[in-house]
Image (cartoon, rainbow, N blue to C red; front, side):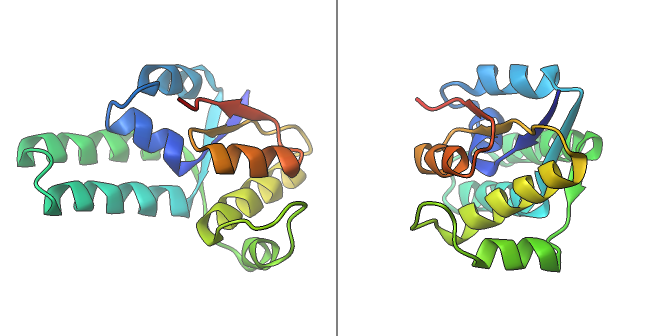
Length: 144
């Protein structure tokens, strides 16, 4: 299975939040993990926020950065192309869809169309889950 890792799921795993173990099991179980460049940006921003808000020690934050970098090195990272941008700006089957959610959905749809096979969309966000299902994406929901 090739799976799309959406930011909310990666962050649950990275910050060891509820369902994080289930998420990493899905990621490890995939033959290949694909994500948008946006996933990495959002995760890096979340680590910076945690540092700015003194929610973790510098050592723990360094460990998070290293874990994310190791994972990203094994993942296929899809850049934000013109096609993805145009698809994200277009109407979705059910609106409203938040901007960054639209970029994730457009990225996953673009990859799925290019591969010609279902691309399970791993998310931990209820709104993103509903939007992905509305877009007829196969979903792996880890929402708690």
